[in-house]
Length: 578
Image (cartoon, rainbow, N blue to C red; front, top):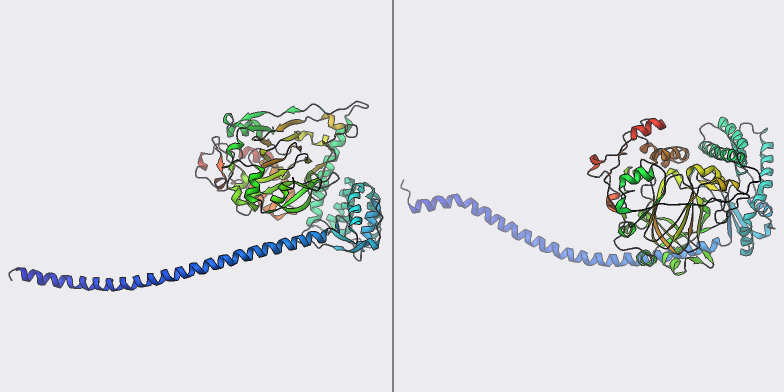
């Protein structure tokens, strides 16, 4: 057949016919899809309007909820004004809490009768692992009587008679209840409060035999052993004192200052962290935030937030002698010159990652601390999201002598104001008359460095204090185990963090081991940090790190991390693979 034009056209028509049919089909489908898209766009617009309406309602509900929360908080605070909390009294079946309150008040010189008490009761613990007896809440009929009782709490040394009466009563109950571990636990607790640690240990060992595995008993025994060791060390130092020698506090050693441009991460670790030597790093703080932070800047950014405030109580048994005072909006706290009446208040160690994560993201973590081992633990681990934290204090407020918890190192960046710091070497601990807090393993001190009395506390003369005035724009490193006392010379704003690295890894493991007896989170953290395969290498060339990168682990270049003596640490302290 001749291949004519007509033949070619016929062949092409036959070949292209299916393609044309497909195109027609696709055009039809396209029209359908186009219509559906158009319909969806209409629905999206309708949903957008509905979403805007719902967002408006949510905003209104949030505002209403916030106002209701404030009203409830105000109501709760108002209700508390006539109340006091009494801690540490063992619970006895059939007890009369109002009578106990009257006895305690009378011991501190306050005449209190049942007519002065509206009601009283125990507060049930939030969990079954509470280490101490439930507190007693007493509501007074008169706020004046409540305030009189509260102000007289500084006379509590007279309560020794009360403790001895309780001890006598408990001992009388032993013959009738020979297998009751609770009686021996209570006796151990009372003798511990009286600082008779040998007797406390005796009764706790009895309690342990009667109730093996009881965590309350085990924890208190660890606390008493720690207190007993501290007491023995102090008594040994007293024995070396020369009689009738005039004692004065030694002249403090100045804290060294280093500019950050001449201090590498490696030199900091080897020269200061590992030798447990405090140091001031200059020229760095101005690079730690996008906008330089001031008290007014913080007020502008988070002034609407409600924060817990603390106050200094000289007779307090709390850590650093700081006790909860009240909740207040941050803006109101700042506008009131950081006071309630004449009483100075303190925003102390307020976690930015927990409460103001958007503000934490403005921070850059200095290279000296950006290798923090806490950030290498799994999400939800104890302390991982606790720091950095915010400190805002008025001029004149003092944080009494204390040691930071769980063996951690500490840094503070001062943005505004001036702070006077006094430190002591860890080896000076027995010379400062130490003891454990009433309800924790943290260490407190009997000495008052705001007005040191070397006649009553002569061992102060044998200490080696260091001192500095931290200026705005400077950063201070405080090594683990170092007792320190802080005075705010001006209204101040600071950011700080506790951290773990190679310099204090073993100390942290030891402290967490004690805490783990009663705290499952401490045990979980200790288990992670104690593993031989836990990533402990650090980097000589470490740089400053934005907060978001600080929170990410592992970094892409962990293979470059070149400082590692984990093997030596494990051999020295005898840790085994978990």
